[in-house]
Image 1 (cartoon, protein in one colour):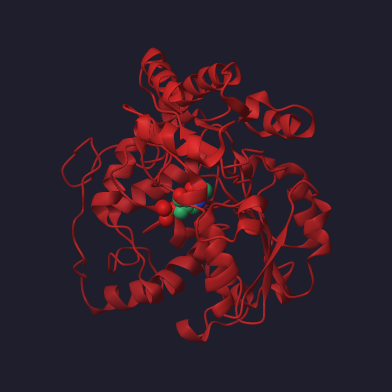
Image 2 (spheres, protein in one colour; image 1 turned 90 degrees about the horizontal axis):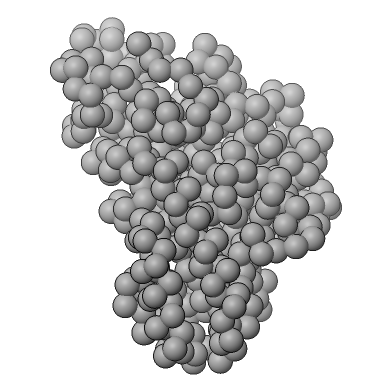
Length: 430
Ligand code: PLP
């Protein structure tokens, strides 16, 4: 029996697993195995030829990871998901799955620093060009697109600017241009459901809110199943032309018996097969455990962050607070259109005293952890200019919204009184 629900609180506990078939275990077992015994040579060759579903080797699939993938796909209303070793792997695969040397993709400038580096430098080594456009103007995506453009890319709730991406507007333009819109929803799981607003594919760092306890690096791609690859076949030869690496399989054809899952199928059986950035079953288990309380945690993260933003906005040493719920005009309209259940756990602010004051503030925190992470159940803080975004030029830092005095908080689920007390004493010292 499977529990049917469209409510995230229920999906994160029940989707993809009722009990273990072999043992009746209720908690998802950790299948810590590399390999799976074939019944006979016919069975083995059928599995390899994708004539029947089943497990071959944990680099490509694993029963523990499978539950995580089903749960994520259900949570976002997608057709299928692929769990991967990290969020960085997820964004790399999301592009490599449709683009090859000579191709390009258009991306929002509002990106995590690591994604920026990946796109601007490492993918360039592969001959794939990232074209950066300001998301304030959705038409910028259209203007930067030509016949070699294979995707558009953005983050739902990009930090540090925390200005919500116009998913519906750009999604409609993407549909018209015949290009899939890929959205990194790392900072807003449950709160935002971009596939319902016109995004075609999601990327997650599961390291953050999904796992939620700072124990495991992981990532995922969720395929909405809504992009019509065959209609735009000349733009997507990797999915619609015979693949020489898989005895001529055409992925849009091969996926037909499984549903609209050509994108995730190809990513799994070619990119994951060849590059091997697999999530370990143990980390899949940890992320599944974290996800069981995801809906609950996102609510508390959002409530606490709202209280922190209000508190900071009244502090004389604070120059400005960056938080979707305090924005006005078009940024606020975009936030309210996408974030239906809270503005998330991230709050940025600038101290009047600039970089020196920012450093003193961070060094004085007693409960907040000074770490390069977001989305932990614990409260976290960082000074992006000297850490996460330090590999970007000063100009590129400003384009992503990092000023010298900017401090980023990932507000945890501790009692709000303790969170405000720690901020108060650190501000006194700043
Ligand atoms: N996307 C976003 C929005 C992130 O914040 C991060 C990491 O900070 C990543 C992707 C990369 O994820 P990972 O660290 O799991 O590789």
